Length: 443
Image (cartoon, rainbow, N blue to C red; front, side):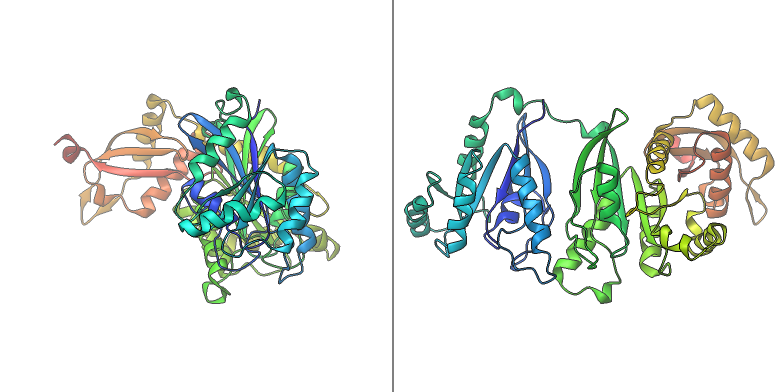
């Protein structure tokens, strides 16, 4: 049994995203004084004590979008309403009743699902009193004056949500710890959302030829081969100097956070464009965070028509993204679903590699052989490697005890990483190695 899904609906700029962010306790949805900022469905698990439910933010009903994506947004809203167990209908107590509010209320009355009417932005006593009476005419029951800005009245709303369904619906949370979290990143219009829709089997993400249609990092939970998976689709990244506004700035920040959250990163690259600075930034952040990484070359159907040699293109990747030499490369067409199924095996293989823990005895045998073949030297001083232990997984992290850590530079770290990769099932993932002074560690 899954826990309840509660969808937030309403016209643009009434505070839907602010409501989700307040209840989630973090900036999940982008909040800007610009109508239509939220386009895709954005969801988050809300936890109060041991009670849980999924809260879904949606685009503004009746949005007039600057990129002419109104029909796409409306489709996502329809799906959110259809899949929800209950709805939070948000209106603006400062603006008063709006013609769009009446249209939305009429639409919600026909869905035959519980609806809680929230009169948002009611920070003052006068607004609380007027909104409590003004919105009765919408025919959706008692209006609840709230403030998503500071949380006024939201405890009452939560109690109403918890009273709607049996207790067991709220007390069996999904275990995200065991889920494989996959971040899908890349430049704008590389085909990330199309790929997510194909892999999840759900048209969750808005797909358009217009660059920049995804703004929030969106979590999509699913099962594949009896394993829990969370996909994190992200906004397309571009150079900082090209960021049009604060909405794009925060979208890009969320993309970098998605990499940090992920267990596996799918870097989608448009093969019809040069691998540029932004792709290198993405690769660099992935290396910095030590994340398993898949290079996904998209739109290969076009390249194949133009008889592009995949071997030469692979050479181009290795010369351009030099730090990702160990990463697997997939040539796909997300639009045509070409070679997309093979990504699942790679995703799970990389995740399993990152979870592998070396037997301590075997690890030290490999370290001893590596030291016999090569040890660093500096100004005549000999380095000594005593023993090592694996301290964690995701990523596999090793503490190597030596006589002087300053003697073990980046070159030796790369050498030792290669030795560990050849000896253990780490062939396609990054490793983290820390050298520690044995004498200092004893003190």
